[in-house]
Image (cartoon, rainbow, N blue to C red; front, top):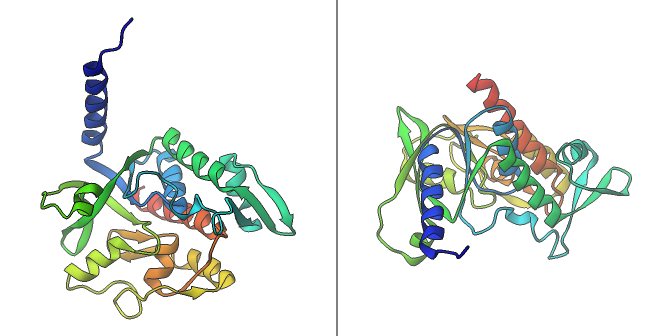
Length: 258
């Protein structure tokens, strides 16, 4: 049997179009496919919630791919070891309470587990704006990342969702859109993005979980976005807080969706 290039092209176009059309209305739109976003998607989809992940880059994984300074190993503390075990990510105890894991295995497994749970992934997508109704975010305004990079004037499309998860990490892209475009107060002490502080791993890990919450009606922050929004420290290549934050945000939204 020969291969027909047009059949190949048709298969890709039809399958992608069907997937996108099916995700125009969601329970949860996850912005960013870093570790916290993918963990959130895994738990949400596993609970039967219609979930899609939108990632600006070509590959999911965020900062986890490179481990620490391109040594592709990460560290997870004992409080998050159970999540590694549940996801079947291999780990080795390096010191009491500290576990190392291969960052490439971790990223690939997170993406696979989330997708197999039912989450849909859309890479090379940027979030231009959000949908606002009665002072509440209820969707995203999306475009191709290449359109943004090239500076082209191409109108976007929209996704409706009951909740949005801001998991873009350090840039807090969704919160910046809301702060810049809307005359509103965020649920932060100043009403604005508080900003990320320098590294202090112990407090950062603790605060990541504490700051994982609703930052504006309809928008939850998790992972490094939580600390950047509410004004806490960065933590470097220890990822227990990321994993626990992703699980926490999923559970909070599952409760609200019922």
